[in-house]
Image (tube, rainbow, N blue to C red):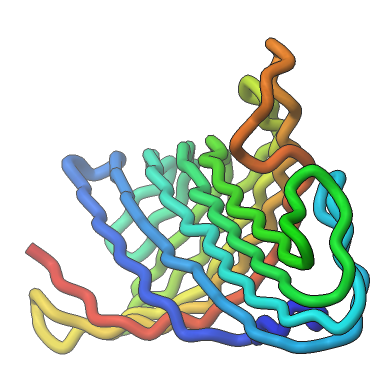
Amino acid sequence: REVLGVSAATVQPAIGIRWKPGRHTEFDLGFQFLSQSGDRSANETIVIGEDTVSGDLDIKSRFSSDNATFQFKYSILAKEKSNVGLGLGLGAIFFDMTLDVTGGTCSGANCVADTLGTPKKFTAPTASIGVFGQWRVGDRWYVGADARGIGAKVDRYDFSVFEGNLGGQYYLSNRWGLGLGWFYTDVTVDVEAKSDGGAADDLVGEVKYNYSSIRVGVIGSF
């Protein structure tokens, strides 16, 4: 992050839809947008795959790792003021990276004079299992917590995911409310080369990151 000049904090949108067809069952669909860019000049040596560029560099970068999740929740304890149960989730991380470096000395198969450009993207499947709880603490107040994670290998992708959140909701009316929550996500994805030995256009290697966020939003109930 320091080398690329990417900020540690950013403001990003997120959306979610929740459907509760019965007392014990619930379906949640969410999408977290996550993208950042950086622009920095520095004297560095950067190695990307088999390519190396070094010297006085102008580094421009764009990253995104949007996260889509779908959860099925089953309430083991479903009472008037409390709801506790298990959750099973599926999802995908849409990773996209573009790194353009100019200046200095560049060597490798993808170097053109003193310029190195590396657009890489892939979609990694994810899954999770965990627990959740929600409690009514007043006429209009609700608080809740959620924790889930898993490690698995799907095709070329070996991944581990942990997600957790704490939050509260205040309903202004029967249909509208406000929400405030803290979310934490930790993701590691190891992408293997294609089994047929062909060149992969996407990224090969390990992607590892974590982030925490505070979400403020409007709740609509229909």
